[in-house]
Amino acid sequence: QVQLVESGGGLVQAGGSLRLSCIASGRTFSDYVMGWFRQAPGKEREFVAAISWSGANKYYADSVKGRFIISRDNAKNTVYLQMNSLKPQDTAVYYCARDRRYRREVTLTAYEYDDWGQGTQVTVSS
Image (cartoon, rainbow, N blue to C red):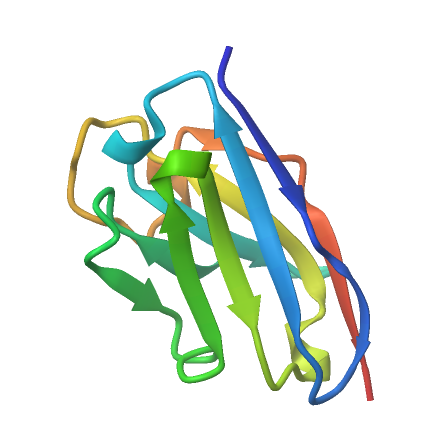
């Protein structure tokens, strides 16, 4: 059974940092693209970052570029999102997602991801 479990969210002041983690199970982790998305109240889910199956290629939304870093540890079946210089507009529920297609190129589109975690709340106070 495929399962993604996020952790690491919380309340932080503007300018602070958080690191999100997502542990995956159910498939060979290293063969699949992983992504992070977020959804703020009243808004649609949006792309944040994605990483290729090998970890060699990383992609970021313009709004987080230079502040967030995505990484993966295939030995631990875990993908991370290091979030620095956080802003109040980063407040959202953050979701980890997996593309089930074997070693495909990275996609930034939410509907192309097959498996989703339950989400973790990130709140940035001003």
